[in-house]
Image 1 (cartoon, rainbow, N blue to C red):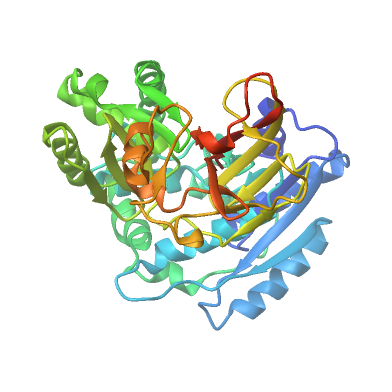
Image 2 (cartoon, rainbow, N blue to C red):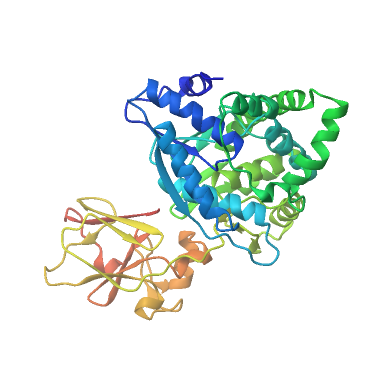
Length: 447
């Protein structure tokens, strides 16, 4: 057991100065890991090792736990960090899930690129995770449970004790006379994990003593299968996803040509790539039906807990369900190369060809604003550089393929109060640089 941390970190080959953070509750699992980390730190002084204790404020013993953890950190010769969090205890929320969410959010705020987070999960925790995944009806990804080493935030999460049983960990703690915290909430079987830990798993082990070990093997096999499936899905998805100035879009025709089971896998993977929360299986199936079967000109918008799925111009877009931030007017200084505006990034470059805004006079005022910011509407007449005649703004949006939910938030360039360009899309003809004349090109991207 003393070499578990070194062995677990070997594949990551931490460089001198790398930070290793241990999520330290003071319970027996993290206490054993803290002891091992102290030994590792003594042998590897070039690695910065820190114990991170999260104070949830849910127990009247929480302050004494802080004192215990700080004292043990000093005993092991490790740096100590305390994070205080507030856990959402509102109605229809899982206290267990909210505490975990708050804990990981606090730790992620401490993480820097290539940092390594150690957690004390062990073989019995893996069995609990697998059983919970079965209870929730999850597929191979959920049944893969926890990996020994996987990406986390800006760095990595490593679980050195994942191959150890609870019995082995408790035996090591006893042999080394390690004092640890006993959280009274661990005995509250209203929480799913505690119910499994206290009532179900002991019964399973009495019948099948090796069930934690064999379940871990099943989880590992599911992880291998999921990895292979992810590679195939990623290959298929690559040719079906296009980049637009307002994010990636999944081509609807390409998705429609797939078999139903591939449609689910591809849409799920597309949502996951966006970094947003997946809808439930039932919601995903309903979304697919509406996306694929709605009239060609129908605007489909489906809102879920973590995302909004929309159909527009033959493509599927997945965005956050949080409204786009719309700043007010922003004056551009002369010579500025790049500016942030809400969810967008505007890049300005000198150019002698292509659609570009004429340089004009030095006293001109260049400003960015949305439609509402400058008081214009969809009925405003525009004359994009690519049209022979002018047209209403709302019609120009359609011609340019700008999604409806983006239009009111899109930054527009105004010169002395007149609409001069829609960055990244068109330049108004009256502000267009002439052939051979230097101008300013405008490129727009989503952050």
